[in-house]
Image (cartoon, rainbow, N blue to C red; front, side):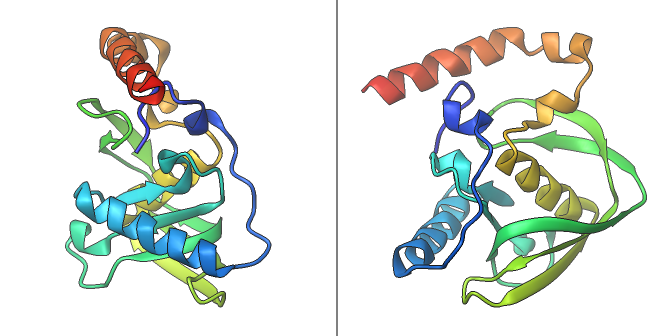
Length: 169
């Protein structure tokens, strides 16, 4: 998994035209990586693969549903607004409060290449919107005011240094 400073995190993901066997395996690996990190969600570009897909783990939001992936996700509907704490596996140790819709409906393609519609509320909605942001090269800190973001400058520089070292090595 890549950290803040890696160019993949700022890359707009490309749509997936066809689910190949290699891509299906990548989606399985993406879910496994998310679960290994105890994540609620993981976007493909967080593992340096700029394709439009994310994995989500509803169980991390206390919802009894197996982890799944959404390919070429699109936000179909949102409702409400709730402010809550948010973090990111690619920005470890950084958390802040920001508003997100309380409900989201997302359409896309599932791991079998079939159309899928998924819905989430509260934490699950936040996670899906967070991952969709990733696919556009947007990080949760981009939603913060400049003054709030400046509070993270030291930690962001540390993460950039750590990422540069791991990419070089």
